[in-house]
Image 1 (tube, rainbow over the protein chains, first blue to last red):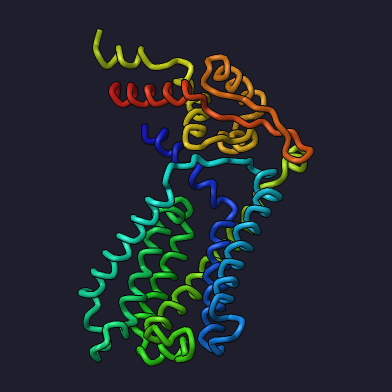
Image 2: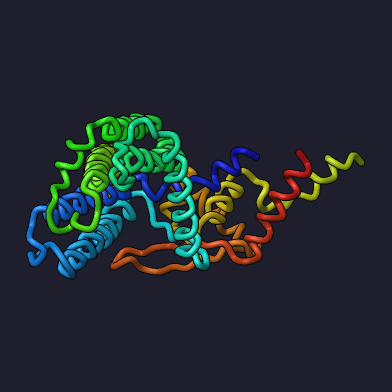
Length: 230
Length: 98
């Protein structure tokens, strides 16, 4: 019976067999981090801010989405086959509600768990520790859905967790300096913003590394059918 | 007859064969997949996989669609509603039997 349940999980794991999912997420993290860096260090009317900033953001998503799709079409499907996943009704709504509820719960938990490390200056928006620790939800998700099947990826999850803890332990002033204090952070606290920026850039770099290793291994261990039968 | 043994006797023979069980379980989790994917996941050779698919198609559990991906022929496979329901019944009966 367990073997049947295992078989039912295999198509889900197949989605990242080539590492392209992680490569896409990694590029997204780095791209978004770079965009935020440019936004914090440019005048409000620059091409990185305002509505143009949104255009850049969606451009990053579009390039990654269509880029990974094209790579799957050209590389993955001819080598190990094509899969079309079942579409759930209102899947986005479930994801939105579940994601929102999880984020709120996590924020509430760290508010109490990480109290000793906060900068208690009357402004609770100036907390770097909760921002960094809330991000720990991602390595948990990563272990459950990706690293569970590929053991060496546990090291990647551990690296992400270490990064979050390191950001949480950094002095708030250092973290705030990453975000700067111009334009985009005018309405946000720069320390929270800095912790967020560091998190997405470091997670992005780790995911990019993991995805690149998976992609190289995939190319090495699979061949298009014509070459495999030759 | 012992109830457990009776439950085992009631299992769908078409699905119960290990090769076909693998195919049906894999297709149950997706909307559709191509022949190459099933070959990669099950590690069966083309002949064996084809014969299992023919048996499942005969039973009305699998739908086979021949198409093209660019200029390359592609065989798309999916479970029919009858196939989905048969697999759900099979899992239920197997759970009861174990």
